[in-house]
Amino acid sequence: MELYNSIIEKVNGHLGSTVPKKYAYNPDKTWEDVGGNQLIMMKESAYELGGDNKPAVNYACISSDDYVTEDEIWVYGKDLNEINGSVSFARIVLVKVDSLKGEGEEDTEPLFRAIQDIDFVKYHVYPKGYMIRSSSDSFREQVRVSKDAVKKGISFEQVGNSYIKEYKKNPNVLAVRVIFATVDDADYAEMRKDAKKVRDITKTLSRILEGMSTDCHSCSLKEICDEVEGLKELHFGKEKKEFKG
Ligand code: SF4
Image (cartoon, rainbow, N blue to C red; front, side, top):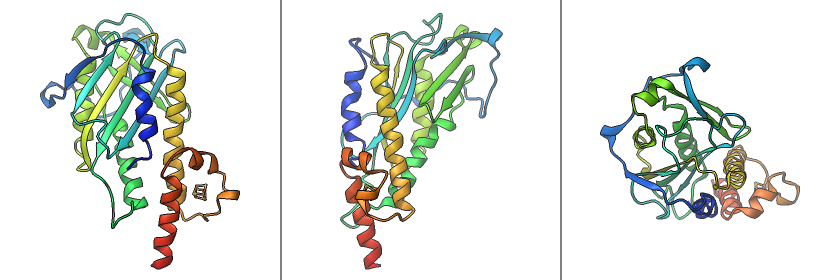
């Protein structure tokens, strides 16, 4: 599963010059989860990640190659209990999955379902005092953090552990790296472009699954298919399989 490899290979280069703090996954060190949407009022808010129109990017990439072999949390910049005003923010997730291969060729449907399941994890994590507002159109993930959570010592390590615990409920997931960035010198504009590319790849897979024709010349998805290795092979492979029955 190599569709996202070119994006994964660029991640470290986007994150500026700071050496990240790294934490091994510890399921006993998650932050309390409230199990559903929560409302943090302005007066209860300590600050916002991505507040005051600062960048706030989120995307997740999956691969069966060995980019990620351990469950880890990487933090570039100030941690949640060190921030005292709006900061730029990114949360990037790299997931190693089992190969998801059928008989000699990748099967589009299980692949697409696996990608969707992994992507939906972001809607199942509700750390207490950490109100996430995401927009799939603008690829933003803005977070309002409460004064109370900061007082109790909320950290990216704990929030990252909460995410990894949720990802690991999926049996296809072998390893996860959750990256948080609040540094000023990260390239958030490039991250946003990659977040869009991730979304475009997933959209293309969805269209291929719907059974569209394989006429690349008249296809509106040609640009992303020309750019991302593996998409055309998936589409042509699917059609060949259906033709054979
Ligand atoms: S392989 Fe060709 S027809 Fe299929 S989605 Fe890509 S550009 Fe469109």
